[in-house]
Image (cartoon, rainbow, N blue to C red; front, top):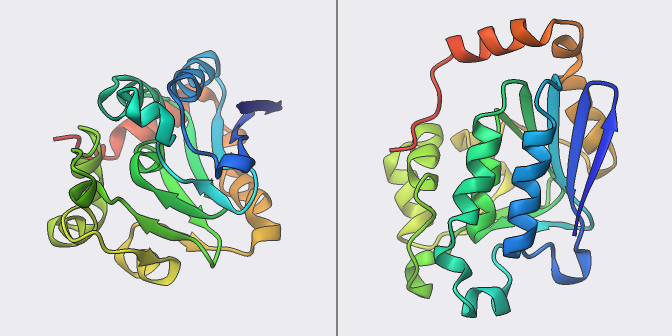
Length: 207
């Protein structure tokens, strides 16, 4: 339920379950982690989805079976955060719930105009995934992170851009091309050079 494509030194991981709004199962999360690990040495990684929703978050049936507290979430986001190349989330639509983890772990985020962002853990009685609040607060500040995580606010793409939650809004038809454009300079460099520059920039907090 994920698709992995390699084009030169770019690895694209696509959540490919559009009939279920790309809702994430444990197997999908572990597959993402494996795909990222297997892409080690690749200069750039793009994470995207099929259809008009990036991900509705956790699969409901899997959640009933305990997915909400499964370490697979952290395994997936940790693999992306630890990737030495450039990582770009190309968000083809709405990001909900635990799907935030893999998005926040990326270096950059592009989104289409109709994307929305919400993480309804308060009303659902779950805690967010451990790394997500720190990464979110590092991008948008603690008060805005609390608006999403504690007040359950749904954020539009325009508001997400003004907050710094995403970096650019791009047309749906140009999403992958624009993500690939962001990788262009990295593709001309040696992999070790990319990693050295990346590690000179403070990492987003996980605490």
